[in-house]
Amino acid sequence: MASAGDRPRRGMTPAEVADSKAARTRSAIIDAALRLFRERGYDATTMRAIATEAGVSVGNAYYYFESKEQLIQGFYDRAQVDHAAAARPVLEGETDLTARIIGIGEAWLSVMEPYRPFAGKFFKNAAEPTSPLSPFSAESTPARDAAVALWVEVLDGSDAKIPKRIRPELPELLWLYFMGIVLFWVHDPTPDISATRRVLHRTAPLVVRAIALTRLPVMRSLLDDVIALIQEIRQVFPPAGASAKPGDSK
Image (cartoon, rainbow, N blue to C red):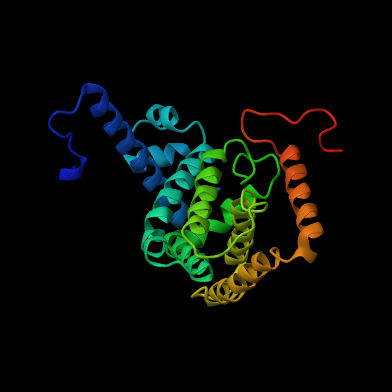
C-alpha cells in the first residue's frame, strides 16, 4: 500500500505525476535487488527474480535498468544522495578540516553498513577496468561527480588555509584518498569495522598535515609535480563524453 508520501500531491501536473511514479518504481526495483543480493548473492540474482520481488514485469524492470550493472549504478547514485544527507550535520556544524573528513567518512560507513555483506561482489566487478561499475567509468560519472562535489563542500566549509594552486585539484584527491578507505572497508575482517574506523581516524589528521605542508615554499616544486601528475591522469581517464587525444598519455 502506498504511503501518504507516495501519493501524488494535489496540483501536480500529469508529467510530475508520471515522474513521481517512475521514481517510486525505480526505487522499488533497487530495493528488491538489494534484498535479493543479501539473500542469494549478486551473481545468483537474476533480473527476472528482481522483477518478481519488486512486483513489476520483467519488461518493466528492463525498461528502467538494462542490466544488473546499470541497476547497481542506480544504487550508487542513491547512496550518494543518502551519504550527502547523513553528512549534513557535520558540514553545517563543524569547521575543523580533520573533523569534517572523519565526519564525512563516518557518515558513509553508516549509510553503507546494511550493504556490507555483499559489497565485496560489487567491488570485485568494479576492479575490472572495462566494467561499467568501475569508479572511473563513464557510467559512474554521476556518482563520481556527486562524491567529488561533497568533498568540495568539505573544503569550502572548513577553516583550513589551502594554497590556491592546489585547491581545484584537492577535492578529487580527497575522493581518491577515501576510495582507499572504501577498499580497506571491503576487506576489513573486523565484524564491527573497527579497523576501518581506526584507519579513517588516524589517516585524516595525516591528510590535513600534508595539505598544510603544501604551503611551505620548499614544497612548491613537489606541488607542481603533483598537479602535473593529476592532469596527466585525467588525460588517460577523460570524463564522460570526452576522449583522450592520440599521444595525450605519452
